[in-house]
Amino acid sequence: MLLGYARVSKSEDQETAPQIRALKQAGCKRIFEETASGGRWDRPELHRLLDQFRAGDTLVVWKLDRLWACAAERDGKPT
Image 1 (cartoon, one colour):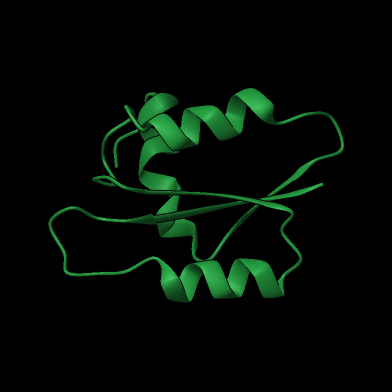
Image 2: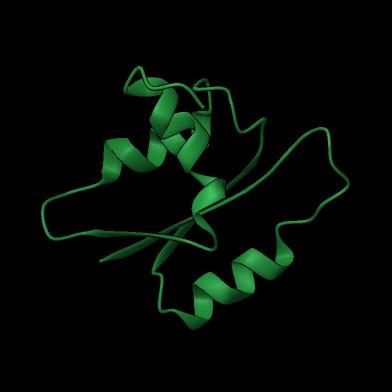
């Protein structure tokens, strides 16, 4: 199953609508969206997505920067 994740930063005046449209066009069956800083790991919707992620699923993001900062932080790599 394709699972989508859309995120906008709290500090920027952004909307998730363009990301949601792109994720739907890509065929995502479930889309998780939130407003959170890219450098923070405490993202409830991302954790919800990861909890539901199963073998064979594919995570889809609009741009890697919507996900990368938290992944690098979690792995102990500098962002």
